[in-house]
Length: 262
Image (tube, rainbow, N blue to C red; front, side, top):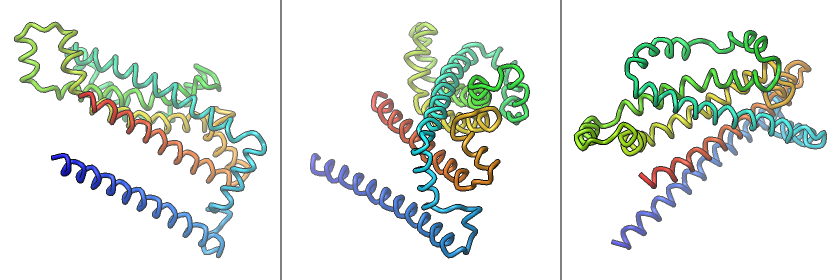
């Protein structure tokens, strides 16, 4: 049994290594083709920039002491908005699950708010909260909160009915049912909502920075567009891609740890 288990674990490790190698190869191939096409001017280096130009742009930002400040501002906004979105979304989802009548009343409004383009509310947000970090966070909350509520609530709704009846037949309290059955059985859905929330939060933060921020990666992209420095724009886009990947990996690690305790 142990030999079979060890072989199985080795197979999984080999599979993970192969996947990582292929992922790195695809990235290398993409950046190599991009660099080649721009160096030969098959595509315009002014419009599409190039990997070497992006590296030079990053070095300039570091020398000007701007690089880490912009990353710090965006990450701080993302973390605050993410924590608020997940926390408030979780509490509201609990209330909707406990009070079915309230859920039926709010259902069309949640759907309407979820489909509403949040950028349209940008001017109103700026008037109410000013052109500052508060407006950026509010913009992100408007995007990630509804998604968190709907996802977590749907997870609660999918709790096994037979287990619910079993708990009720044993005269378990509502608190016991919620903490011992509903929430633990929804761990995977809650983690899935984390992944969605991170993605939506990053989108909201960048949208907010486009509107009001004087620092952050979104500001770098807007500033680069205004002065026609497309190297700066592409640098901002690449930084966003890296940050989104790192945030996704953090959530994935959290998922593995939580699922071990199920």
